[in-house]
Image: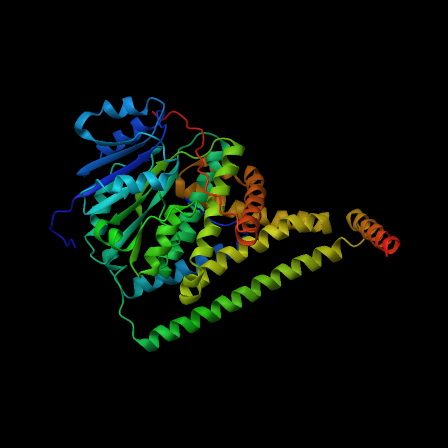
Length: 104
Length: 346
């Protein structure tokens, strides 16, 4: 069984939100547990609206994740500017550049 | 179709290969159901250990189908066995899995709803060591949060191979065995969604399964799961574009997986200090969900999981990226079967 991808907590938070909304919906509409999974008839407009909303949420989430990723990388680069790893990388880059200069 | 009051014939099908350490307990759990299954079919896939003798000892309580030479793949054995079943509903499980005593009873209740084509059950890990405890933590979080949310979205990502049930007529009409991925259960689930067939998630339908007990076995199993996950994603990519709900869920899971894994292996090279912050915040999340898992599974040992789980996070992230590179970019189509070392189930 495939459990889940490596997670950081973001998808868990989003899923917690979905569970809360789903549970509220089930309670408000008083759907008996046995019927909670019946197929709902939806018309074309509802289907389109659902598709647009899902697309927008996916788009915003994707942007959010990429923004978080970029922020984390940038922040860690800034934080590590003076650290030995950066110096080590700097030496490595200088060596590679020197090598290219000698070659060409 | 079966409504309330009609008789439903239920078959349990178990493919097995060299399962002498666990198959007896599996069959006994099938025979100890509060609602007995009408048929238990065991597919002995060329076992070379004492599995055949154990199966014979059950006499006519079970039907045994022998494949003389091992097919080496669970889905081949399952396909072969399904030719012999006569149930309206069939339950798929593994030779290392114990069914809860009410498993069949709840399956019958679920399939009284004629709209339901398949049911996904709830998997629990049999306690053994710290690795199985980590897996129990993953199961608790994955099934009580991720899967429950997917249930509300009406898009269940996977029906576990060890705890699934299918309406036979619809399965045979719409699903064919293609044997082209490492995770046949995930492939089935994608194809059920492709046909718009309803998949129900029932947390009362419980199985107890064996999980890897060594790091190498764990890593190999993750290779199969993640490799199969990427293979299925490529195979069904058109479905992802067509269905917004699927696109949403897949983006959430896979993009988070990629970004998190890349961060985990990049940040230490940029800043050690920032990496410690990163780990600290991850530990905070892990502790919160460990408390949740301990309560959900009623296991106090899960409270200690965040510490050893860090190691598994590194393995998971590495394997996830490795399989992405192999399957998506290098188009590796290996379908080697993986079988972990079994422990004796009493």
